[in-house]
Length: 502
Image 1 (cartoon, helix red, strand yellow):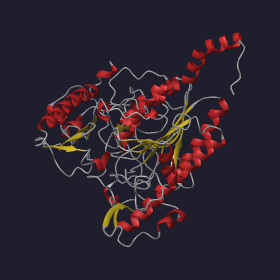
Image 2 (cartoon, one colour; image 1 turned 90 degrees about the horizontal axis):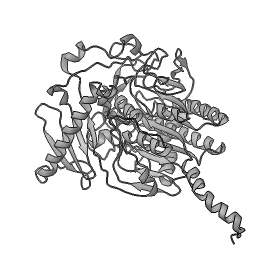
Image 3 (cartoon, rainbow, N blue to C red; image 1 turned 120 degrees about the vertical axis):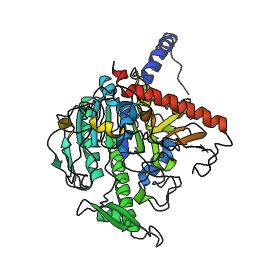
Image 4 (spheres, rainbow, N blue to C red; image 1 turned 180 degrees about the vertical axis):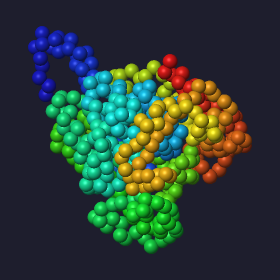
């Protein structure tokens, strides 16, 4: 029985209700953004993989919000990471492909949440410019209070830079290392009474593949018919390409994924022990589809680097026990560009006053399934032929030189990676080239990227594997999407000239 309050107290209670409701609405979650490197859509147990063991991600998908049509903003790593940080298509600021950097004028989710009182930390792969202190696009300049990061990807016993300092060697399994650093950051934020944004970008499962014996043992008994072809990967011994049996490669890759999954479990357990589990939003996704050497069970067309579903469909799951009290699943299209506007909506921070390419997903948290209003645009834009080489660098090339070594040698034979970005002040017809696609709730238009611009239309509701071009059956839809794609490109190219910064 609910006790009856005396009339004066009851009146005061009723007067206080709006303030209490407002205070409840103002409660802001802690945020942890987790991203696997080259982790494709089907490479989780919850998405039906026949061999992989991912019990932690499976539990998150079973109890949180499962995003069944989640896309990476780009078909490779640097482009997608830019979309997470900015909520904007990566071509707006000149990230064409891996190794192209952010521009210092971009406003990131770390900038926005830091201004809102959040402690901000980045851990793991950065790949949006050099992480050294002198870099104008290191994590610190892009809004993070602290960082333990790598310019690119990393394996066991990685070299990482702490707050821009010289690379240090960390001994151990790489996913566990970056999670341990994130946990230390979270504990400091809790002690200081601050909400936190922790961005943890794993080096796994990107090749070259390395795993601990106990993780490899999980996949000693793969069926005999798995991976009976040769694939090209990086040798851990020489840092150069080598051809290997795919079965052996998959065993190592699966082991890396299971180790990454285990480390996420370590983080979740720590949050619960610290009383932070309910009020922390964890968002996991991949940065692009499965790479060619690992394609074995992908149910979609294409792979990493392609704008077909196999190149851009990735795992996506959100866990936030205080808000997501029951399991939800949605087939509403969503993309990494949506991360910034969603978090801004939850925290009560205005989005930047410039063109964005994402939208808030907060309505999905209540079980709604609204049709997506704005389409998703994917574009493997290319710098202009020889003009790109002659273009003026956006940043001093010396500031774009990476310092953190990795196993895989670069084209110049060095174990580090450098970055670039170029100034572009005008737009030409050539700038519209490159493989591209536009996705709505049902239909998807793909343009092959040649000057001729051959197009295909797919009905994703009936044909998610993109086997049948239906453009002749739905010419009006194809024409409408082609116009919408061209309009989006015009906006993106205006941004690339620096118009958004003026």
